[in-house]
Image (tube, rainbow, N blue to C red; front, side):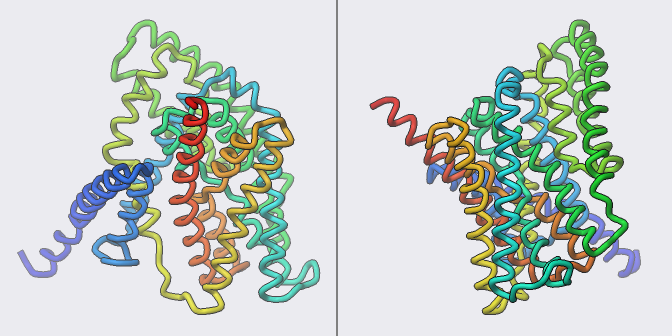
Length: 403
């Protein structure tokens, strides 16, 4: 074999080495985090930081790793949907909508003001105004996959607070997409917010109609092939199909489609069995790659003094915007102070949705590459702090109940 062909063969199998390093390091640091009474997802994110470009640089993000990570977050949200208590979902629907609205518009306003405070106030319609508005738009994105993992680990996902956070995050996602389209429309007249709203409504209408039929088919299969792998395989295929349809044809995040698929199947008698079987693959491979992948994406090469100060302020305002917006509105809706804080902290995580929004801005030429570092910093800090803060609040409440 020639040297050129040999090198190509070696490159072809690099993903196996990368995957082995990610899985081992994610598990090791996950156990370390658990030893210090922190959720394992925190350790998995730190693992990505250490093996990625920030420190050792032994693993680089690739299309393969990104694909596995995307499947990981889809499976995580599908499991969350399967574990949803429909009674509590109906109870929290209206409240979740109000919380989601506050969780979008307060960070949007604060982010816009923050950018203008650093780079000057600009008139409506100018390029600088659009850029400021887009910085606020990035802050509106909520990604609760890390919150889901933390609540699931603590056994709190199907409770009232967990269900409220999940419902609010889904609604937040839809509102955020509409806001994103409207902001991009200030620069690109081909974007139409009305079409986005119609598409969002159509998706949920389609999900409701087809979901009824799909549920009946699965219920029939469940009576004939109870506790069989074919039920799990069919369920996962439905999840992936819904994720694809949501993203491809309706412009809604694939994780929303996956969550809706879980909601459709959550009342099956085999829902717990399906969730348990899906969780095996998710826990072994896909979820660790997703969480470690957040760390792999991180790079601070373009960071200078001014950008560093802006990035710190950006992170602080983005986190406080969600906590204050969602938390105070939750309190106004008669949640206790502790539960309001849990909802606020649960909604402050940013992840793939924030990255998607930022990439849209980069593609449209609204913002430049340098602001990507601030977004990555926000993702890292919110991903690590949210599970820790939630665990602290739940532990404090449990101690108070025992006292």
